[in-house]
Image: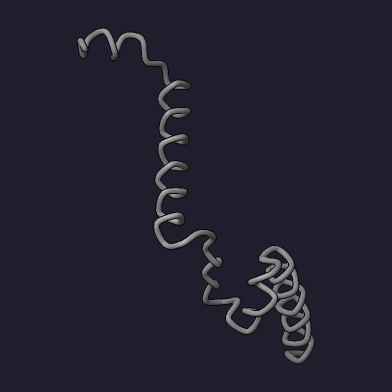
Length: 80
């Protein structure tokens, strides 16, 4: 295959599309090599919500945010 031909026909959109497909293929291949689905890794600030995070990552993040927001208001009000 002629390298000049490939470079002249490859567009930015085509490159990004190919890169995304390749990344997905690598990620899927890695999960299948480990035996199927992979449990999401719990983020460090969500360690207290690990059980909820396994079933609903977004819900765990929202609960953490609500709790952090409430603690911030308590802290702010206690400074007066």
